Length: 397
Image (cartoon, rainbow, N blue to C red):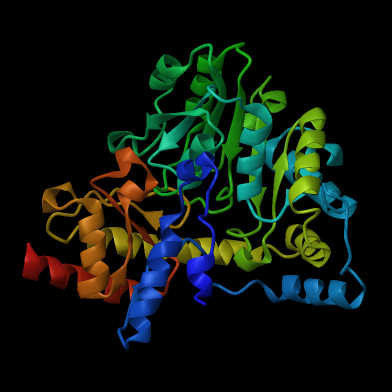
């Protein structure tokens, strides 16, 4: 008997058809498959630091394992970590934060998912940046809300236009998502931008999810948070974490900071989904925030050097033009002059030139005409990638 033939039809819930993905992982799989066939691929597709987690953090995690931090912890996170995060956010955002306002989760994405799940009903509207992190739109659609994109324009250095935001806000708007420094463009919101955004929201009953996961990776000026503005803290959910800042992507640890009554509900979502974040990783998180910070500064300096080389190189390739991003570790060149759709060019660069990049369209409709390259790779490999892209363009365009 053929067991496979006997399987009943899989009847997925309709909502599964609304669930998107993160293309970086799909391209990584394709790149790995090419490598398995003997191809040399330069990986500029995945959004994670190529540095190791600092040794003091690793040692703290190992020590925690030996000391028995291998059991369940509170759904909201260990008190010692929530206290440390509260102190850190109070200092960096100039607002008073208590441990009761902190929820620790396994990675940054749960804060996106839980926030939308807790605050948004079917049919409500959520304004989100486009091009932007694809999970925003995916989760909005998945939960049956209306995803309302606000275009991040190249001529504004991919900053959000507050006047355009004001035109999109209506009585159905329940949540606005901000991201600065921004993925995929590297755009950074200035303090004036945030003040204008706050004025556009006014006294409406609208919450703001402010994704600041790249807040320590900024190259020009300083990081500003809308949470710091008068009257905005109680209306904000701050998303931050350890993955990008401390090269801890595999540790899976992020956090949200929000008013205590909302924190209670997000903690209950944690109870119903993950139970808790791994205890030993949280002990390592305390060391990350309280320990030496030189590794963060060094990593940021390296990303800035790589950014400069990448942008300069791309601007010397026919059909490419690239602005200098002010934060994160991505560059987002305009490739409209090549005449090729973004995905077609990204696929060709991977399959024919051995350079893994992402189509700008993977980050939303307004990302068409761009590519995203991560500079989380060595200068040697970045220069190799630039040579390969230039060679492919000279040969094919």
